[in-house]
Amino acid sequence: GKATPDPMSAEGLVRRHENRQVLLRRVSGLRGRIHQLEEEVADLERTIKGLPYDVQRAASSSDGPPTPRRFSFAANAFAGGVALPLAIGCMHPLDTVRTRMQAALHGEGNFTQALRGLGWKGFVRGIGPSIIWAAPQGAIRLGCYETCKSALASGTLGPGPLSVSVSAVVADLASSFVKVPRELIT
Figure 1 (tube, helix red, strand yellow):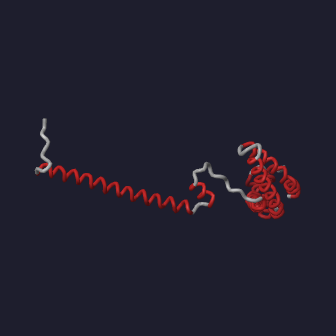
Figure 2 (cartoon, rainbow, N blue to C red):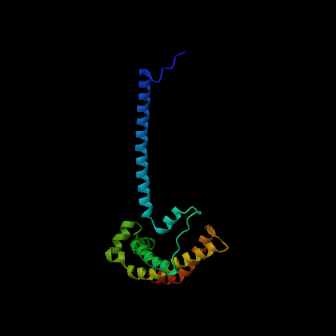
Figure 3 (cartoon, rainbow, N blue to C red):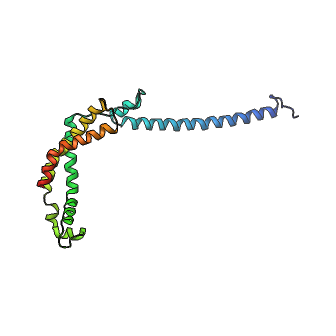
């Protein structure tokens, strides 16, 4: 076979120098990649620091899945008391047109005809009382839903679809004490 060159010969020194250059280029490439990874880690750390407190705690602990944040009945009721009136306010005009189309006797069966028949004032008629009555309905519904869901999830039903379903039924029944009169009036 081929004889191995003497490491101290000119050919051996050239080969060692070439190998050293290859290794230095690889080390330089790896250092660049490490620098990129360090920047990515720093970006992720900045993102995590901007997340809500519970998510940060869950990300930093490995005790199991994160626990959802729980709010008081009052906080949930306030959120529901704001959210439902906003939703009703957005959808009331469309609901008015739909009702007009359903009740049409004289050919106002399409959207454009119902809209023309209502006019601007008819389009927003009744929006004030709807929004006002929606606040207590939303407060009762979301407050009851979240409270019931928490109680059932930590009790015999455990977290899951059954506790969510039962909570939704209870919340809707409770809010019906406001919803039914609201729908009769508006």
